[in-house]
Length: 410
Length: 147
Image (cartoon, rainbow over all chains, first blue to last red; front, side, top):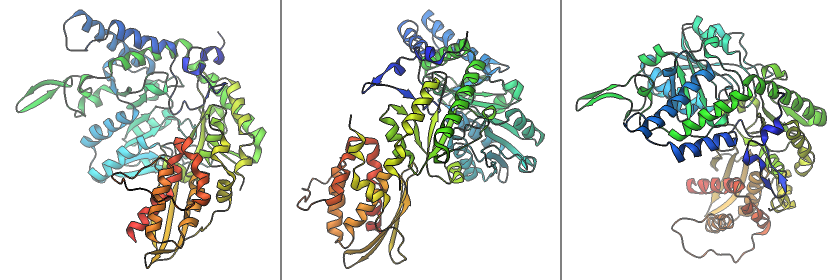
């Protein structure tokens, strides 16, 4: 089957919306993705037929609910090729997953003067949890710099990693679209004796993910960016690491026993899943994984590579010097997040103009202020594409930019 | 749906292209900084206060056409005015932006024309942009409170 984005778009009810007599052109999937009917139906069906507490009640309904929930966990394992299903920890999102690693692993293993290495292209979710350890534990941060075309500058990587305990980095920049050499970075981390934490929230929704091939130690991703519901995310970690870590949040479900004088922890994965989780959302994430897997992650990546190749050339050909596109020019090393500067138009104003054509783009700092400072901007406009965006959507963006510059020319 | 012409009135674009009172004031002038953490817009307001009057005002910073033009218009509107008049004007402007001062039910003095500021009235039709328009005004209040 050849990939047909226009046909796939029909799976997404929201993308059928007509606003002010015009179709919707949704180019903000790096922010959050839209949901196919299959995911919506799976969640409705689950609530209509199966919803019950998990892991704690003896009746048949609760057993069915637990089975469905655990089946989704198993699908997550397969999706990222993790060795063990009990290594899949459900969190609220990537942000919470990285906080879990920083607070639990970092809190137990990092001490004053220890070094954590990050990159200059991280979003706040992979910066602030480590800054918090600077404040609480006195750790030090080092930063991998960027090349002029928005890739990681690995010239001095071994030097930066010398003595480091953690190397935490994104697999794909949410601003620049850059795909980082994850396998190489994991190997460099291990050579230095550091653990490798991979932030996959932009990468996992768009690519084949294989934590064994990467030889990673932790991976985080969010359901809402991969056609699933919001409110649910995943932390994967090596079983031995997770077993050795102290718990993160305390409460029901994460305990082995509780007495007046203390508690013991449950086995993985329950140890890190305190309280009632978003049960229906986990079912929705499972449905999203089924949906994406049926299409094929390699097909999705191929489609997106064609989309970004077309977008880069269409925007550059039409607007030349009037447009500056941040990040790599080679589609082999970039995903579909496309940040740009257009003439002197402020991204807010640009977004407002594009909104007249129902084109949804993000305008702002993309929760990556250190990177924005490096780019010399306090905001950029960002279009981001997904499996449901056809080349027509790219054309709509290219055409709608025409005239935006005239209104605001200084 | 409101059109772009409701938002981007010519007088707004004029203040955006040719901002008034750009620059800094040296101490003892009071400086206040405002940030919009959602979008990264930033602004610095400098005021020179004497005898209950704002003698001079200067603005630096960067942001969208609405935040920058609103700052420019604000600077022109408050220069040379008494602090009491300015506080009333801030309240009036925020009222126009649908933002009311909590716990203050006293009538707002609307006897004077708002002048150029009237042009920003269209912003309320674009709720996301209200915070752009009021950024410089809140920063001005910070400066007045520190003066």
